[in-house]
Image 1 (cartoon, rainbow, N blue to C red):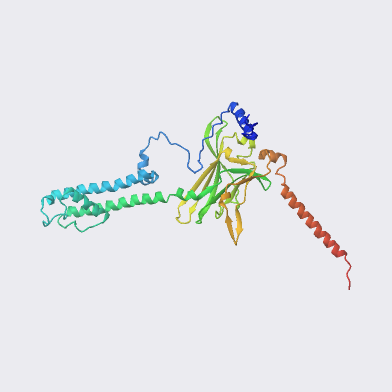
Image 2: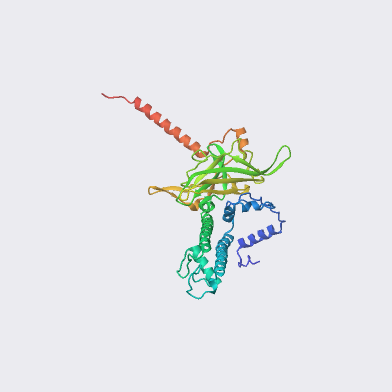
Length: 391
C-alpha cells in the first residue's frame, strides 16, 4: 500500500518481502569450526594439563622467569630486590646490636658501621651497599671483621640478582616472537594452475628493512588419521614439499614472495577437489625460520590455513612495481586475489585425463602470435631472395 502511494520505493518493499520469506525458512545449524592447531597469530593452540612433575620447571629457573607473563615478571623483579635489601638490613641491624652500636651516642668512636642506630638506618645502609649509592653518611669501619665479610657477601649476592633479573628483562624484551610480529602471511591461501599443474600458494612478506638471514619455510598438513591397525592419531603431521622462486626451502625475503607447493602424486592434497576441500578435517601449517640481522637471534613465525581459508581458483595480484629506478611494494594489496580459470577436479583426475593442465587462452594467444611473426619473417626472407639483383 505504501509503495502504491509513493511513500516507499517499490524495490525496498520487494527486498523486505524477500528477507521476511527467508526469515521464515528453517535455519540450518552451521557446521562446527575445526579447532586450530596453530592460530593465525602463530600461537600453538595446545593446553597442557595434569602435569605432575612441576619441579622440573624449577630446575631451569631462568627459562621459567622468561616464560612468565610481564606482570608476574615485574612482581618477581621488584620482590627479589626488596627481599634482599630487607634480609641484609636485618643482618646489619644484628651486627650493630651485637657490637653495641645501637646504644652508642652520636659520633661515638669505633662502631662497626657509622650512623647505624636503628633498623631504618640499617635498611638504608643495606640499600646503599647493594646498589652502590653511597651518600657518605654511613660507612663501614675496620672495627668488625664480620661486617667486612658481610659487605663482600652482599655485593656478590647483589651482582647475582642484577645479572639474573636484568638478563630476564632483556630476554623478554628481545624475544624472537617480537621480531615475528612484522613477518606477515596472506589471510588466505589459494589453489590455482601454475606451469601446467595445480599448485597450493600463499604469500609471505617482511615489513622491516632489516632482513631475516637464512630464512627458510616449512609446510605441514595436520589432520586426524587412522592407521590400518585401527590406531587413531589425532594430530598427524605430514611434511609437504614446497617450491619457491629460488627452488629451495631457503628464501631471500627482501620483498613479498608467493610460496608455491605443486600438488603431485606425493602431495597430501593430491585427492582434494573444491567440494571435498570444505569437508576435509585438515590444516596447513606454515613455519618460517631465520636469524634476525640486527640481533643475531633466531626467530620463528607461524600461521595456518583451514579449508575455508583456502580459495580454489584464485591467484594473488601483483604488488611489486618498478618506479623511478627502484622496486615499490604496495602492501595494501598484499592479500588481494583474482579469479582464474581452474579445473574443478582433483590433481589426480587431471593426471589421469591429460597428464597436465591445458594451456590457458593467454598462452595460446601468445603462441599463435609467435607463429604468425615467424611466418612473416620467413615470407619476407623468401621475397628478398626472389627480387632481381642489378649490377
